[in-house]
Length: 125
Figure 1 (tube, one colour):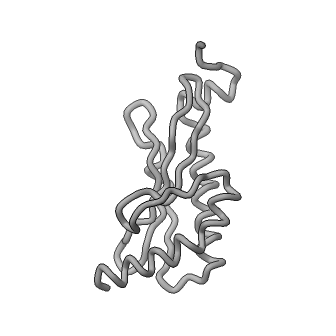
Figure 2 (cartoon, helix red, strand yellow; figure 1 turned 30 degrees about the vertical axis):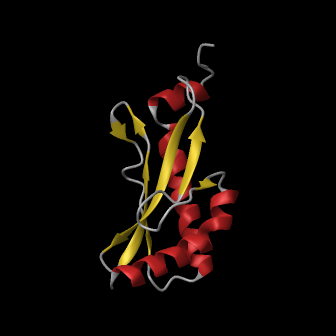
Figure 3 (cartoon, one colour; figure 1 turned 45 degrees about the vertical axis):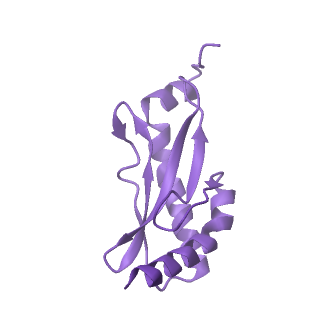
């Protein structure tokens, strides 16, 4: 698949995911397909707000939803991956984002600063 075909297919999947992105409380992130995040989410933590990003990246003959959120020097979303096959329907692409968002939420809630926030610790004014 050449770059134009890949970007066209990626844009199709991103468009299909827009409603799921909104419903999962992520914000669509504008940019060129393959060059930037497709969505972001501000996360409340004990040290203040931090941002998580979701990416749709080419992988072999399909795409993968992956994330990035650095906590204690590591990407806590590194294990959150969902495959998006090239021939997915719009509904399947939206379901893929929902699956990613569920994985991401669980991983984010286990990050150190977020877990402190969930237990009641708030940033100092």
